[in-house]
Every structure is written in C-alpha cells, then in structure tokens.
Length: 202
Image (cartoon, rainbow, N blue to C red; front, side, top):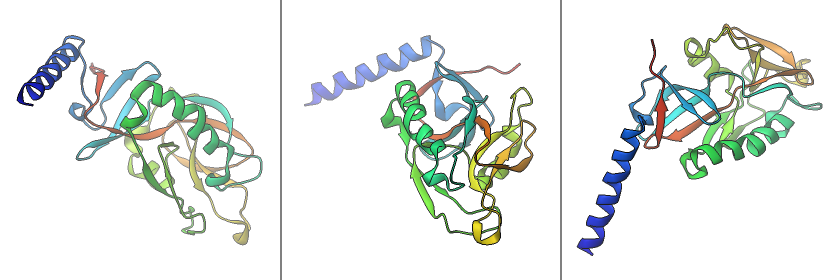
C-alpha cells in the first residue's frame, strides 16, 4: 500500500515537472484579468475562487448567431442548445468535461422580474449582472460585434417580449431583438488545479 502511494506521488511530481518544462502553470496562479491560451482560443480570468476559476473567451467564439426565433427565454432558446451542445463539446475536448464545473445562472430580467427562474449549466453567455460585475475585464474593442447575454430585457406582460440584453466591445449594455444575430462569448467555471499556458503581458 505504502509503495503504491509513493509511486503515485512520484508520477504526480513527474507530471508537475513536465508541465513546468512546457511553461504551463496551474490556472489558480493566473490573477484576475490575466489570460491564458488554449487550442480553442484565448481566455480571460474573471474571478478566482477557492478551488475554481471563472473565465470567458477573450474574443467572440461564434459570430452571427441568432438567440432564437421564438423566445427571449434563454432556457428555451437555440443559443442554449448551441452552448450546451457544440460549444460544450469543444470545451470538454479542450479542458476535460470533468474540469468544467456546473454553475447556476439567475435569469432575472433587466427590470427585476424572476419569471424565468434559474439555470444550472456548464457553458453559457454571461448574465446581465455578471456583465456589470466584470465589466472592466470584458472590454475588448477588437471584437467585431456585440454579444449576447442570457438575460431577457423584460416580458410580454410588460409589453417588451422581444429583447435580450447584449454587450458591446466597449462594455456598454443595450437590448436587441432575439431573432437578430449577435456574437457569442462563452463563460464557464473551471477547476483551478488544471494546467494552462499563461499569456505573459507586455
């Protein structure tokens, strides 16, 4: 038993040394606002938690994507299908699905209605509240288009059934009809003990 533990410890040390040789660091070592490169693009660290890290793509991951042709409710949208289908598959191939944490999103409308409830998922757009919280870190004027949040502007009962909050490259927020096309900038929470390729800032 003791020999098995020693062998596993040795394997772990060898793996750590190998990652250090490649110039990789644990995700937990990258500060808020820091960036890291992957095979699917560059990511920005938005928040460091005890054992997990909130991140978002630096650029748009998809362009010209319709939120939906019938709903401003993210739970029923084709954008959710894209995020939890193709995009989650690509993130899982890159990070390992076991390293992507399930997170909760409150789908409170811009005017404070809670009719859309909450959502448990792994990869999604930011909510309006997150876009406001992380706003300074999101600014990227090289992004070619506004991008979706998963927050409806209001509801049909308040005569505003068609709009979803979107974020501009400069960080401002506005509304856009759900059947229009905007970019997708996925957000997720990763286990912070994974190794990534840190971007050294000038």
